[in-house]
Image 1 (spheres, one colour):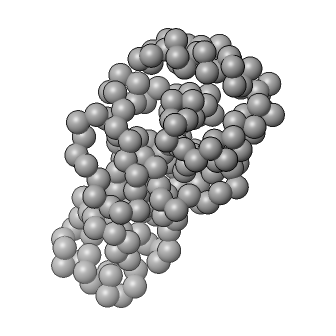
Image 2: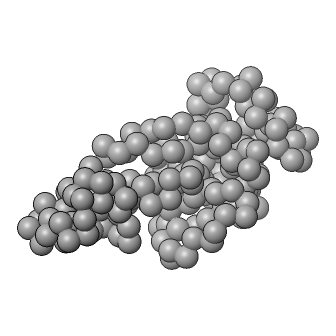
Length: 180
């Protein structure tokens, strides 16, 4: 189980006892402020624990949902606009308006850990919004997979999401032209 420093302090009682557990191999330091009772944990689980208010998006979520077979080199996280910049070189941070940051989020199980990620409907909108910043072949691969699975998507939910976005007309037009 992955624990934060605060949770470790509650469990072990002091830093001294935490250090003792680490020396005995009962506790492992995975990253700054992140510990586990297992030596190896998934990178997404560690990042999810380290940044609990962030949402996995774009390449990370596309890969998780099987919309691409390209393994992302970095983790893509959405955070609220004005949040502290994440300096980890393995993370690409996308700043999002606070009113739509958690729109369409779901808790998913990934290697035994629960992480926050956008659902497939919200990811489709993120794909359309970020079309110009993604490699063309990568964009087309994901778009093709969405076209193949369009009957599994909740189109009413997508329409509801679009209305909450700035530049909703542009996104709706792209949805009509490229997906439906």
